[in-house]
Length: 385
Image 1: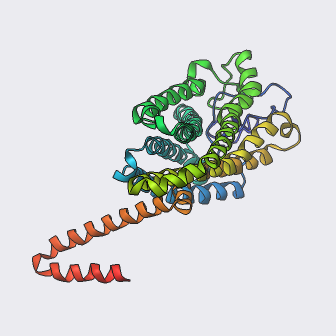
Image 2 (image 1 turned 120 degrees about the vertical axis):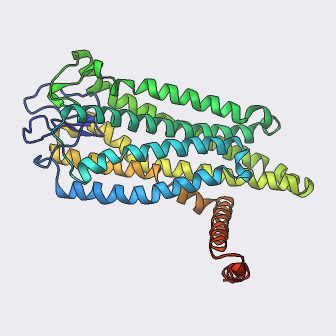
Image 3 (image 1 turned 45 degrees about the vertical axis):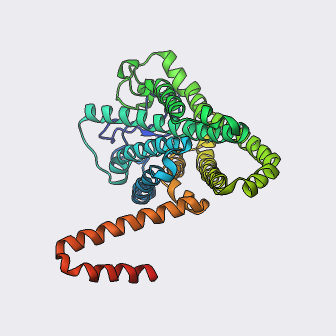
């Protein structure tokens, strides 16, 4: 979905901008598009210095914290304590989807934040199509992966005696494959050049090649369809399953207390692990709500209200702010998990200790065996501090 300044002749790329459906062209003709186009060039009046600075520094912060956080999350969920749990497998898949989303955001960072422009329109058309598809594909995957995580925890709470049958790594992997295939099919029109683009609101081409039916679909149906499937429907289902889980947990609270008292250390450990995974899931849901709701509201208002009341410059700014807020969901999950789960923090500290021990071992090998005792004393001193 796109906003584009098709009437601006100073844009060297001949493309539009991404994140929301295009406004009607100045001559009153129909709007639409086939994807998210390359950012307008430096001569475009629709792109302000504020907008460029927000994209430049906003995405730079997301990249720094996001890549570090996701690398730690991937390591933690693959550790022995968590990797056998089906929920952790889903969190790994969601982390991979978030990483791909952040990698795709380099398109925005380079061509809008760094103001890099190119006269090769064919290359820009291919890049913008790839970016359009990858961004929406990852957003759909992440939303439904989170819902699958919630269903996995719901099944564990609702059917505690059938956990080994219902919540297996094989089942969640099959479910993840279904999500990937459906998400790719849903957003395939953004990546397929033979479908065409809308010339009045240039997206990935400077000329109109799409049919009238596709113009209507992209400008009227697609914004609402993708908002419902990508944000609203997952949100409603997440709320429904979450409420059901809390009701069931309250009903089983007395039974779990008896289990902790009489079930021994193994049962207590399982209860602790289930509780911590539930906290991680809840924190992910809260982050999803906070970051995705503004984007969904913008898409809906954009289609029915804002097009006729705001200028192109204002639409572009609101669009980029909404996209940036939504992108926080794909970079901040590690830090939210650390704040919400004691188990996640413990596993993170264990990873840090392992890395520190390896560094000490490498230094010991470099300086020779005569300094092993000195390095050991140094580690002990650091541990005490």
